[in-house]
Image (cartoon, rainbow, N blue to C red; front, side, top):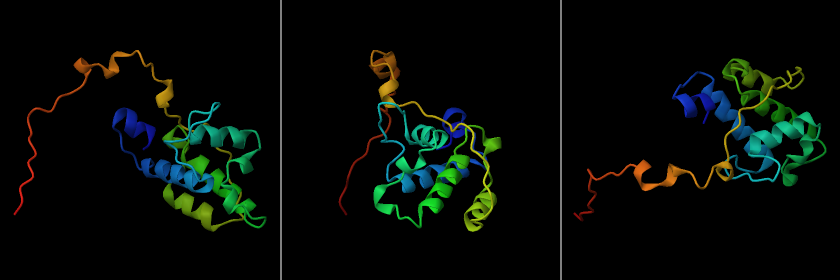
Length: 149
C-alpha cells in the first residue's frame, strides 16, 4: 500500500506504481515486505535501498534465481522496483514508463531516490496505550448467525 494512501487516504495514479514496485522487489528477493526482519533494516524496501546504494544488490536476490546470464536483468528489475517505491509520488514513474523500462532493456535507468519506509511492528512502543481497551472500538451493533437451509 502506498504511503500516501496508508497515511492520508489519498489514492493517486502512482499508488499502483508503488504496489508494483513492492511486488517486483518481493519476487526478486523471495521475501515479503511485511515479514522482512533484519537487525539493520526495518523492511525489504530499506534493505533493497541500502544494498543498492552500497553496490551490493546481488545480496538481495533469491539465490535460486541467480544465473550468470540473468544477473544484469535482475539488477535492472531491482532498479525499476526501487524507482517505483520512491517516497515522493512525483518521483515515481508512471506505469507506461515502467512497461517501457521493462521492455527496452538497453535504455539507461535513472538512479532511484530514497524509498518510502514503513514503521516495523518491533519499533512500536509496547507500553503505549494504543492497545488499551479504551482505545479499541467495540462492535456491539451487529450479530452474525449461521443458519442452515
